[in-house]
Length: 464
Image (cartoon, rainbow, N blue to C red; front, side, top):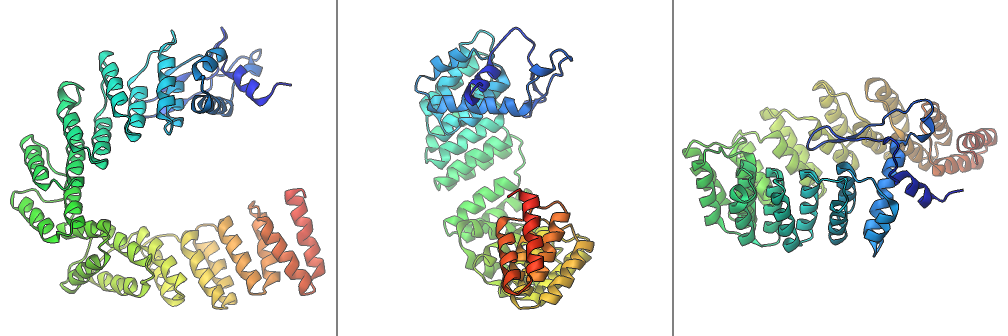
C-alpha cells in the first residue's frame, strides 16, 4: 500500500494522459480550478479538488524545507502550469529565498511560460521580506519579457518602502513607474507615495505631491485626505490637520466625508482617545452628528476601555440629533452593555435594531441571554431565547453551548438537558464538556434516568 507521500507524488506525475484538473484563469485576479470529467473507462483516474490542493501543499513543503529542492522537484516530473506556480508561491510567501529558487526552477521547465500574476506574487513576497536587490532583478526580468506590474503592485512596493523608512527608494520607484515599468501613475500610486512621505513626517513633500496630483488631473479621494490627516494627528498637530482640510475646501476639493470625521478617525488611529472623545462631545453639543462609521470606530475604541456609560450617553445624544445607526453600531454596543450588566439598556438597543429593520443575529441576542443568566433571570432568559428562535436568525452552536453552560452554572440541569437534546435535533453537535457537565449535574440532583438518556445520546452521536 502506497504511503501518503507516494500517493501525492503519483498525483503530480506528468503523463501522456489528459490532465484531470485543467488550470484556467477566470480573470487576472481570480483563479478557478475546474474538474474535467472523464469517460466511464477513465473514471478511476479523475483527480478530486481535495487531492489537487493536497498535492500543492506537498510541493510547498518541499520548497520550504528541502535543501535540495530542485533535485527533489525534478524527481517528481511535475507538469508545471501558471496556476500551479502561483499557488505554490503564495503558499511559500514566508520563505522568500526558497520561493525565488522554486520560481527559477519552474522557469527552466520547457512547458512553462510565466505570467504577470506569478511575477507579481513573488515581487510582493520579496518586498515584504526586504529582499529589495532580488526584487529589482526580478522586475527587470519581468519587463524584459514585456510583462509589467499593475498599479496595485507598484502601490504595494511604495508603501513597503515607506513602512521601513526608505523614502528615497519609494520616490525612486514612483518616478520609474511610468517609464521603466510601463505603469500609469494612478491615484492609488499617489496615495501610496503620500503615505510613505507622511510615515517619515515629510509634510512639505506631501503637500507638494498633492499639488502635483491636482495638476495631473486627479481628484483626491477619502484616502488622500485620511493619510495626511492621520499623519498630522499622530504628530499631535490637530490644528494643522484642520487648516489643511479648510485649505483644500477653499480650492474646491471637499473630502468625501466631513473634515471633522477625518480628524476624529485620525486621533483614534494615533491613540489620542481622550481628544477624540472631547471633539465628538463638542460636536454633539453644537448640534452636529458624526458620520456613522466614525461613530462606530469611536464607540468600539471606548468600549474596549470598559467606558460603557459614556458610549450609551453618547449614543442617546447623537441618536436624538438624527444619527442613523447601522448594524455594526448594534454589534458593538449590545455586547458591551450586556457585559456591563445593563440588561434593560441592551433590550432597548436590540428593540431599536429590530425597528430599524434588522433581524437579530445570534451575536446580538446571545450576550443579552448571558447577561440575564448571570443575574439569575433564567425564566426570562428562556422566554427571550424562545422568542428569538422565532423572530431572529436561528441560534448556532456557540449560542447553545453558552446557554447550556450558564444553565449548568445556575443549577438548571434539566433545562440544560432539554437544550442539549434540542441542539442535536437541529443537527448541531454538542461539545464533550457539555455532556459531562449535564450528566454529572443530573446525577448529583437525583435525575439518574435522564442522565442515562443523555449518556446514551452522547454515545449515539460521538460513537464513544
